[in-house]
Length: 233
Image (tube, rainbow, N blue to C red):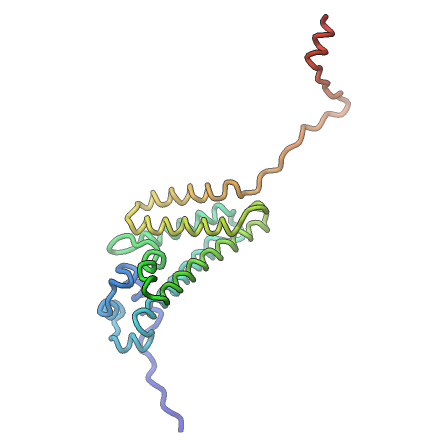
């Protein structure tokens, strides 16, 4: 005999995760209580835990969902038509706009600004944070390598080093945003950082040789100083 199925859930999991993400983003993992989560999501504890697991599991799911936002930002910024420096600037500006949101003040990056404090005592959160960093590094490196194949970046450029530098810049800007740095200041930092990062990695223009000699003209012969002196004596 077939067992009857349970009642379908009367809520949208994606919407609930978004609300939980917003709560964690403002308060951080430790400071967000179960009462905060039930108030934010509108679900009672049994329904919340049945759908997502414990508080740690809900937070990890929220980090994964935030990662989807960042992937969308990457895809919108790094297009085949965009020059590399413009793509980087576009990505950083979009990230800054996201970091400067929050009803109670600027919140920075959800993952990079809330996970580090909780990672020490929660292995699952540490793993999620490490995964987010590795994913960011890998995406930057993939775009840098693609720029090499298009001739926008020197073949000798160390794409792994540049990718990690870009990630470190992103982390710093996120923390500065959460500390309350003005949007204009963050934009200026990003613009200067991208310029500094790519300055020595761009493909140098071709070195021009000597100007071609006109047909019928004789090459100029340089006369040494001693020869000139001898001729004048």
